[in-house]
Amino acid sequence: MIVDLSLNLVLQQLFTGIALGAMYVLVAIGISLIFGMLTVVNFAHGAFYMVGAYVGVYLYGNTGNFWLSLVVTPLVVGGIGLLTERFLVRPLYGRGIDYPLLLTFGLSYVLIDVIRMLFGIQGLEFSTPEALTGAVNIGIGYFPLYRLFVIAVTLVLLAALWLLIEKTDFGLIIRAGVRDPLILRVLGIDVGRVWLIVFGIGTAVAGLAGLLAAPLRGVTPEMGQPVLVEAFVVTVIGGMGSLLGAVLGGFLVGIVVSMTALFKPEMAELSMYALMALMLLLRPYGLFGRAGVMS
Image (cartoon, rainbow, N blue to C red):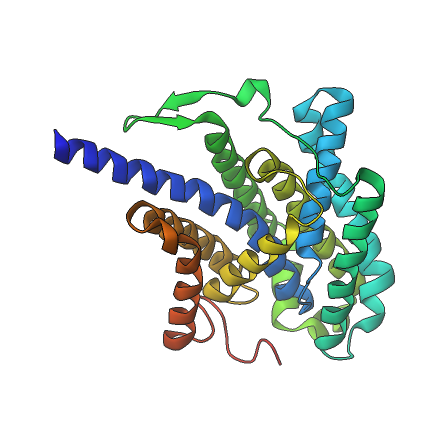
């Protein structure tokens, strides 16, 4: 019986790691998508995540409809991303990777201060929607329904992105643009419009992640800063610019953190950085990265 209980506990913790990894994936794929196509290191990604949480909480508080918030929030944050790319990031293309990095770094603090002015510095309360409260028996014990919902949303989103990138003409353009943007220009494709849409999709996913994380992590103006660090850890492990790397890296980090918390709780947060250091030593470009991508 003791062995059975221990096994169930390990399996439950493993499933917790998958749920945690789903959140990492949601944040990391936005960064990887933008970097893979635009070669822009988006340091405002955590701020877009935070804005998504605030937009979602505001909509939910005023409409009482979580499902409406779930649809509208990524559209609003994606719209902000479109404006950011068109008027702030686009003029810096071709000037080196440092320019958009510094711009988005500054933009993140602007967005934080705007949220502070609009909503205050104390943060907002956001409880789990009533329809998603409680726990479900998954065979190895009871697991929070909301975390299962986060896993399901992540899987649906990944399937949608895969269909977009692998099965549509626009996805073909994205894949070609990652390899050689010059070819797209030669073929008469408006590369600027493609970059605009990709940046919008990446920020929209960040906004969705912020809303989904709100009941789990709370809603404060500074909530995006630690998440940005975690997202870059996942991205480095998976490989800069690789969507597959972001997915596998996110779930891997989530499982490592969760299992470390089971056996050595005080080392849980450190474990992801140890994993990143190990990856940099053994495979400097990550699981699916490629040499020269940062040049």
